Image (cartoon, rainbow, N blue to C red):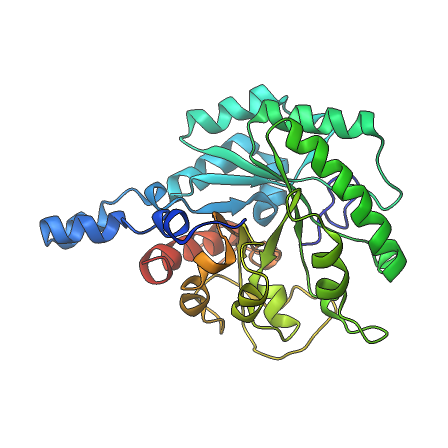
Length: 321
């Protein structure tokens, strides 16, 4: 995700029982078994699947009309929100309590927030304010989403991760888990090492920082998420679902043009989802960095909403079941 939050670019182990418990009692399957009717399946509340949405997917719409956009998202069946706009101690221009109420009134919840700690570091005072604001919002996770091009060096990575570990301690003191969201550049082999494995996962305190794995960017870099889960079990509490149109890899430049709705492209999410227990996955979010290419469809509907509706339908009908 290329986000602009605080000057972003446009921006353990979980037991098998608890992880599988998130979806084992699938409401769609139960409903169909109990009634044997198609109408029962069609009438199921998709919020019962616990699907999340990264609001960067509809960032322009959120800027234009946050309340109206969230209502559309709620009507589609998304339950959990991951935010992408925190500045001046407000979320999308609202105080933590105001935004929390907007979501609650729509039957949704802010579970996570992308909030960048810049490469030059963060003071303990600012980190505490950030932690307090997110605690007031009620999120369980706060995520570092991006690293600028000029800061992608081994030494900078190590310095930033040391800062993030400290932020993680402050977040933990108010009941929030800090996290890191990957792209594909962390997998670029440099001087004989792969930073994601040899720096990020090694230098991050696993008790203070979990990984939010972006299945699209990992695949783009030519790596298999399931192999990563097996090598680093329990480290990936958060997942991002987005699909790719063309299965070319490895690619290390952050290019968004190949992104498409979940279940439309070439990634075998069913296979990856089957490995959720070993990964430690607790929550997942749909994300569309492209905003559906930002153009209306033939009926004049905004593509971001068309794309994320396709994603949740495919998730709840063919991937999470």
